[in-house]
Amino acid sequence: MRRILVSAVIVGVLAGCAGKDVKDEAPVEERRPDAVTAPPVTAPQQKPKPPVVTQVESKPLGANPLKDPNNILSKRSVLFDYDSAAVKDEFKPIVTAHAKYLTDNRGRKVVVQGNTDERGSREYNLALGQRRAESVKKMMMLLGATDGQIETVSFGEEKPRAMGSEESAWSQNRRADIVYDGE
Amino acid sequence: MRVLMGIALLLFALLGSILSPRPAHAALTIEIIGGGERQIPVAIAPLQGEARLPHRISEVVAADLARTGLFRMVDPGGIAPMPVEPGEVRYGDWTSRGAEALVIGSITPTADGRFEVRFRLLDVQKQVQLAGFSYTISGAQARNAAHRIADVVYEKLLGIPGAFATRIVYVVKQGPRYELQVSDADGFGAQTVLASNEPIISPTWAPDGNRLAYVSFEAKKPIVYVQTLSSGQRRAVANFRGSNSAPAWSPDGRRLAVVLTRDGNSQIYMMSAQGGSASRLSNSASIDTEPNFSPDGQSLLFTSDRGGSPQIYRMSVSGGSVERLTFDGTYNVSPRYSPDGKSFVYVQRSGGRFNLMLQELGTRQVIPLTDGVIDESPSFAPNGRMILYASKQGGRGILAAVSNDGRIKQRLTVQSGDVREPAWGPMQKGF
Image 1 (cartoon, each protein chain N blue to C red):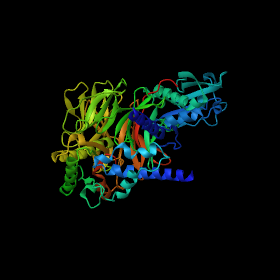
Image 2 (cartoon, rainbow over the protein chains, first blue to last red):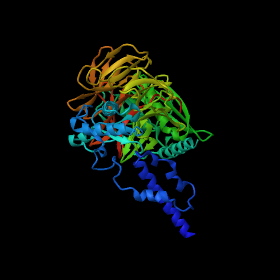
Image 3 (tube, helix red, strand yellow):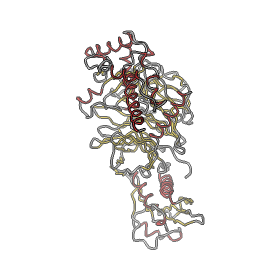
Image 4 (cartoon, rainbow over the protein chains, first blue to last red):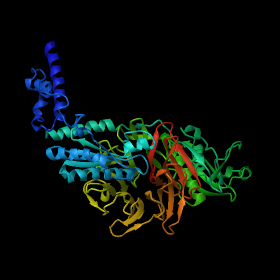
């Protein structure tokens, strides 16, 4: 009885891992279906299903280009000048790479989150952050991504990455972040 | 079906974690800076039997009046016996102390466990009664009764309605936690009506004083909610693709102007306060935000950068012409109409500082109101005499208020936390 319980726990843990990894590796669409997450929900007393285990073991870390630190797609932040929503040259390769990824993976969606530094009206900053997110979206669409793949939202000055009231912090906070669905 | 149930469960879980109304511990304390040129000397005699109540009414009335900077409190100490009825007043006692007006009264327990509060306002020089009222209240309503007495005194002596029996809303940030709090206008009785680990901004009162609209980021994007204070129920009223923000109530409380980005740039839309569809009101390729209704509901002030820098504009709610109202400087934002519709307050950036300004619409005359480093988020008291705003002190957000001529300033500080986004509520009806 105790062994069954222990193995049931293991199934749950494994299934949990599988679920997460598979979600991250979403471009391979076949791996997303419910079957993967089914074991812990249905019959915890059953023996582990081999596919779940093998899938986890066979997946090398870093297989996900969006998470691979050596891949430009792992870069998600576009920084802006004060009072500007123009994508600077140094960030164009990042936007271009994500635009290409979205073009090649029509099933993927992103949210572009615009941010500002802390100076000024919160609501006006919300609109400025939105303009930065829109600026990134427009560039992505020019490069082949579709409107339906990109939602733009703004956090305004509300979610600063860097704390502090000086330019070194402000420059980090004038930012748009690219976040994929499921992240 | 399963999906629907999942969503319902998720919503339930979210609500459970977000909604936890509880009394807040941080009380606001008030500090007055400056004062009026002429202060009316007023004596507030202790009301007979007021020790029976949890708060001494005469002290709350005196604190309310003193806070305005328009009255000088005359100490009633040492007068015995303390008068309760007009016939008991020895006017010489009060004229010798310089009082021009006097409040007397009593607290009497009623058969049903409540209290009858009787008070009279007397003109000491003319030796006549200016006002006399009685309220029957519960012990918990003692402060509210005191605020109503202060309102009567203020109105009788100044000819303008008071705004003491009102409430304010503001956001307190403590570490990662955001709390939307409602308190009396003097900072007492603070209650947390919403707590979240994501930002809350732009709270604003419905004209009925029982609903708030605000922007919450709890769903990882800005969504406009309307919450009913008496029931605690809340509803996402503007949750369109993109960002949803800057709610403003129409004077009848039925509609909201909101800022949506569903068509790309931030534009002003009109919708029912119940939610549903939104119709676009502003039509520019720029940022149009921070709408605010005129008291007659016919026009809106808003911030737009259509001219290259953010400035204040006015437009009709039925569409049509747009008029620019600010020209001085390159950053004028956050407009709010005065309750009489004759002026508006806004925030101007000048030399890296953000300060409140007041523009008279008739003359276009501009009066600077504040001189802090970062003063923002202004809102008028319902009598138009004071403007509540957010300021900074020692790197921490605090609340402050300034008179509409800039002469009297109050600072309201909580014991801990970063306070921001205040909004003064409407006049309250009944207890």
